[in-house]
Image 1 (cartoon, one colour):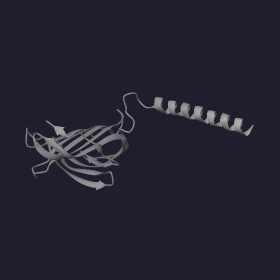
Image 2 (image 1 turned 135 degrees about the horizontal axis):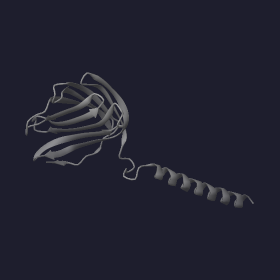
Image 3 (image 1 turned 45 degrees about the vertical axis):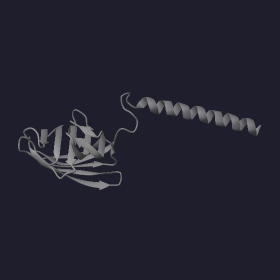
Image 4 (image 1 turned 180 degrees about the vertical axis):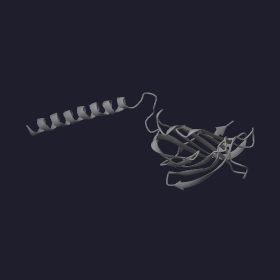
Length: 172
């Protein structure tokens, strides 16, 4: 009797666990791979307007990367908010050459404060100017961007990433 009860209980538990796992898997968007996003926090000012949001985003880093044949480290951050949110979209790409050359920074922010863009690097005409300070913390860290966008509006944003995933190591 005890053996039969134990077998029934184990069978029921396995079936319940399988059903719970199936429900959990169907709740995630089909195009999202598990573990590809984490909670990203953004705070600061853009164009004189405050920003304070957090949500799903992607942070990546490659210690040994290359851009146009130059050895560099790479950091990227992608964040997508709602269309009516404070931040609709944020993209940051930072290439830091290991030879001490100037950083290449690409920053785009769309939100209630307007559209802000910074493009700097050795090629092409710069749009705005900015510097990024990197403060590592465990598997993640903070990226602090300070500068002016292409329209001359001040940008002061901190991006907190709980962890950095491995980034692609080759740029054009």
